[in-house]
Length: 403
Ligand SMILES: Nc1nc2c(ncn2[C@@H]2O[C@H](COP(=O)(O)OP(=O)(O)O)[C@@H](O)[C@H]2O)c(=O)[nH]1
Ligand SMILES: [Mg+2]
Picture (tube, helix red, strand yellow):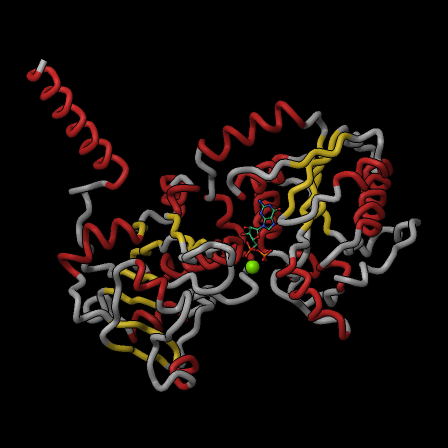
């Protein structure tokens, strides 16, 4: 018996070592001194924003020819938690890293970098934070800043900086001729083996080339499978998807639009175009009446285009799904909502819908827009009517007073 359990234990140890080896490539990672490394803090916004910072940085690293150390997503605590603390999710928890490597093979997760390479090649006491003079000038000449996530992010990855390196006249628009070469001249890998940027090297709004990298983001099975099962079980086809972004933080954001039309706000250029129309409050936050009116408008367009009308409508939301109002307004269409374990499952379902109406201002919606673009699928936006088409014949109510 004792012998048998010893065998069982050593087998377990062996299996976990091999298992660990497979997912973290233990022992397979070699230091690449010729290319050098770059990393950044996804210090702005939540998941949708951080994802844009990731694909923007992927393009940036590829142009500079450096290995990209992919940071984890920062998941901010709920204010109600007893001891609020960020959680961190490595990119390969959600996405297939092998697919990302088809665009650019020189990527490594920050977790692997810190456990495998940093202890040997990026010595403590010799770690430098990089930033622009614009940032340093407002920060006592240093790149490092206090607060969450500016310090907490690095701290939680086990990184403390010893010095700052401040650049002038270097830009992130690496699609323009000569820009990447300029970076390489100023910061050759031989003298700057690890560049730790305190912000992501991306421009807002992200460029078309960056948007196209969505093609390489493939959700892993533990997100895809339950979402597929949900669709199969609950959503009779054809089905449409809605993104209703209407939580308290969002109402506050959209209040910025109260004083008149803005040229853009957050991700709004996904619907208005890079230098197009201004963004309105109706694009940002919708009342029940507006949601219903906009669905009717899209149904009308579908009818005119001879597209089959939806049998069900899936509602993804961060707050209020308006399920009952929508069901009452569209008795022949089944209104379905979920509240999945992971937000990414909502993104997946919206990606699969036959048609969607998204929120023009939201980065969460922008993920779905890019995903559908690369797959050639239709996208419409709340409050933004195709200027080529006739305006809807339905009346529109202003958003609720309390919002
Ligand atoms: N599950 C789920 N979460 C959502 C939805 N809309 C927003 N959220 C949550 O709210 C966050 C919004 O932040 P972000 O992704 O930066 O996009 P933005 O703030 O809408 O521009 C997401 O990361 C989600 O956690 C939704 O439809 N479904
Ligand atoms: Mg956000």
